[in-house]
Image (cartoon, rainbow, N blue to C red; front, side):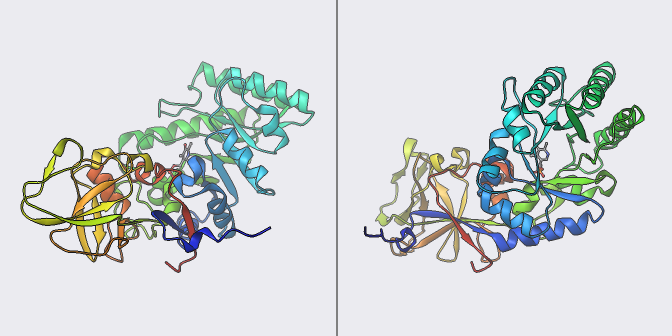
Length: 388
Ligand SMILES: *Cc1c(COP(=O)(O)O)cnc(C)c1O
């Protein structure tokens, strides 16, 4: 049987280079910011679009000792791919979820309410193995988690009963911030107070959690009193700033991991007054050249960045001309005539003069998280190691 030619020799329509050396450096930086805590690498949503398995491996090499995902399916897929011997937690459960598979795969599962506690204890009975359960408190986010007061009292009481019956181990007590990306926001101190009260309540009644945790990336970077035993970092691992208010990635000591680029599919001259792309929202101001970038909203390029998103072509920043379409968009090259196939860089670390994910977030009225996470599966991820 003949081997097929390696794909990587073909010129790529587009690619997302993922610099695993940068990711490892970010893990080390974050560990330095939270020296007393263990680090959980949050690799949900395919590692925010960067590829869960290679990013999980790189994070573990650099000293992460926990992995975190939203759904149990994401965590189970990492186990099935061979990630063993490391603690792994998943928190987004719905009734009928794969509790027994999670127990058998040695996952830590999150429980926010009585329905989940009942399902996990039943699954533990079937599995014949105690489940590792982390009780989640809503300390003020107003999303997941158990409300303080009677709800928390009941959940703690019943979880301790299940622990006494040998069906679960309460391995963690945890919560999540609402406004950690806005340092000084009054909800931060209020949530920390509530977290201390809710954890103390459970511990006074006999809970012996291995880890108490509440810090996400912005809290890890700005709020040492939130670090407790474990920090759960997502966006910062990928070198994207949690918010412009906290500064650029460089200000935070982080290096962007993803560089998104494409090969120009066409360069052509057009006269002045020429409408460009659907709706003709851009009309050439005079004779000029247009470059066709073969990426569109199916690839995660936000349609809201129509007329605004920045692209580096031939050393100059160009702007999306007119609407972003499903598979392509156009830039006005102002008379320059790069060859078809010339590289257009949408975003990267920025030190080659290219825009950053933060620039695209601003152009689209969103956050850097959404820019990197939505890059679609049609864009191949190419793993490099600082050699970009
Ligand atoms: C996504 C997520 C994180 C990571 O948040 P970042 O701001 O990306 O660091 C941490 N904890 C929970 C519960 C999450 O859902």
